Length: 182
Length: 196
Image (cartoon, rainbow over all chains, first blue to last red; front, side, top):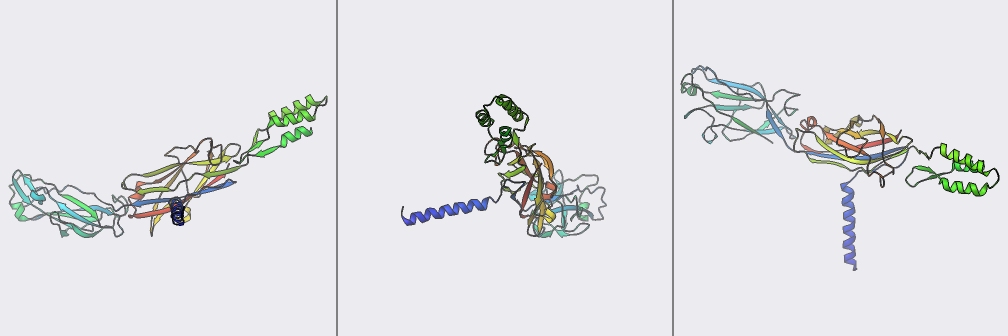
């Protein structure tokens, strides 16, 4: 075996030994009146967010002369280092528009978001456009402990929309909110 | 009586640590050769009686924990469920009852079972089962011995007999996961075994 090959093999052996040692730091105990062993423990928690605490929105018997507003507190949890997130909304109308429908008839509504709870106004959301830079104060994924809610969802219907709706006619739709970590 | 005393006190130690008495056949043969006097049969009978009534083995009251492996949860994708890692280990107890106790000590404050990622921490639970191959067990309290455990190991590293004799289970509860900041968490767990 020439010297170069010997050195290459030696280096490989040393590398293998070092690699094994680094991968396993567990220690066994020795035989005695007591014996002590140890293990290292590792776990990785990925970026995660969760939105919860949402309630359906009902505008019932609205006075067409008065704009309708529904605000609710929701829980958004983010485990990133900044507790940051973004939120994207989409409706059930054409091209995910924020519209309610009764057959072929539709009526628009608007959506706002505030990163604190208890708000009756917030930043207007565009269809499919992420509102970035939001921060959560939640300490539990479902706000079961710590603050019970962390953000506000506001849905509005203008007087123009209300006045376009025939009386005693029910319009329905769905609003989807997608939250992503930042 | 000299021969009987020799038989009664002869002790050897196995490489594995468990103490045994010298072969009774060797001792009896020696006795027969040395005691061919008229009183030899009575002497031999007395010697055999001592052997029959006396303990066959003497315990060294030594213990050993071996065959531990580092615990790696990897990336825990589902934070809504408990993450569980279990392993079979070897605990050997050379006591009269093969009994032992075990104490877990973590690297959190006061020996608590905590993993850390910078300033962030995440708690975990340690369960112990005195049988191998288990995924559940008795929850250990940091620094508090779990007593009354019994080992089935017959060799100090389980190189023969049962290959393992107990289970170590590490659990990160969903409550801890769902409250933890994202990151890589590390820590260590020390297990102290004592004879019983």
